[in-house]
Image 1 (cartoon, helix red, strand yellow):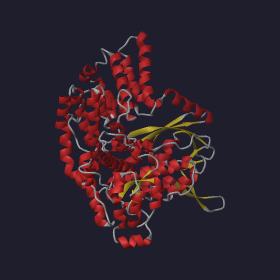
Image 2 (image 1 turned 120 degrees about the horizontal axis):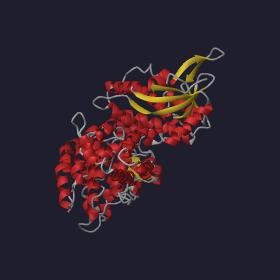
Image 3 (image 1 turned 180 degrees about the vertical axis):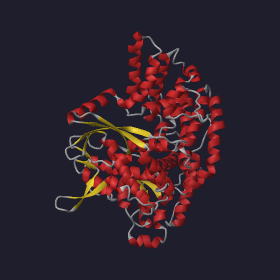
Image 4 (image 1 turned 90 degrees about the vertical axis):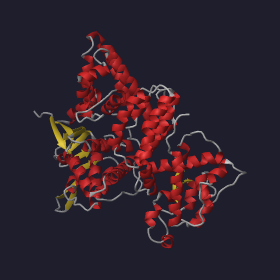
Length: 589
């Protein structure tokens, strides 16, 4: 009688096998936030001072008669890992390294019954057109055409992975080191059932009992040991609320617990740093000095209530809301700037969740500015995570406007001042190749909104959505795909200048379609009709009365008669000058 087999597989081991995802399975549904979260979690462990193996989940399979594995659970992760291998091949080629050892993990060459060579792919998706799309990607091609939603998401996921590698690793050695860690230290548990019925039962059991949350059980069991058995039912209800809160948006419980601890308690890891990793959570919470801090032995219900309150606030912050559930402009802006996977700022927000709303809103606004500086100057994630952890404690002690201003002056303003020259230099070289597309959109939206505010005399902070909705597009003033005569007339470095921030503006879609790939002399007439004054000002300025708000903003804008290298550089400098007033740390008056 065959038994259930359980294997601990590295990525390298995993893709020595052949997997089939049957068409009755749910199709590929992962979006940007899921793909980037997986990569960032792996990179976070890889970047640790002593990187160890990193577990990313389980797969449930059943071996078929032809020695392939039918995937019952885990296809989202398997497909993404396959795409990662494809992206690594592309990246290795770009940095001048050999990828011949990676290609056999995508497919092996075999001979069919007629003696002809065929490619046997390690992953076969049997739902609509996705298998062909995956094969094209594995051959180094970007599929083009009308595809199913699932296939479109696969193509997009490949782009997200490629973009992550492009932005995160610059040298051959960096790429090789990360690849080595990815292939050998990232692990999955593969559960192989003898029959398809057994595999489905295991899948049902895993999802019903939440095996992915088992690390939380260590903490739960620790707390349950502090109470009488007749109180188990009451505590279990409260614990389920915590899990439900996190599961609603598929948030990782251990990541939340880590930020909860660092934002609420004094921490110090074995290396003397004010930060702890997920692996260190349980050891931290069981130490005598931390038992006193959390007081979970004496008052377990209070401790669980604190976790729940923080979990509820945490999930609201992720949605761009304050702890009361009200929409918050600055938290929403951070979402647009940071992307779906950005989380580190939540430490500061959790520490501030009980502040008076005026104080909280002002702090949130300053945090947005700080994150902008960190991301543009490429501050290492580990560095600002350490700072956020240490800053959380003084934030919790803020009671008044004076306390808040002292915190801002001593910490945030100091950080900004130290980075001003670095930011200015980085900003002048911003391109669509050096920064993620959603961050470029955020920057253009903030710049455009700022000019509109002063053009129309409305100085209150406003929602950015009007500048980032469907129908508002990123316009390349120097066309991205020009006619040959335009490229020739511009001269050398066309491709370098077309992607500069100074060459970009926001434009309504109908106008963008009309503008197309035309010469600047023709585009100017279209820009005049844009509702965005920053775009309109490229072609000309509007003067109203004397010393009006529009006249004052005109003094900071530039119009252009021609569009060449000098024009693009001048406009990028102009945008930098505007940025100094948009992203600045302010005290609360």
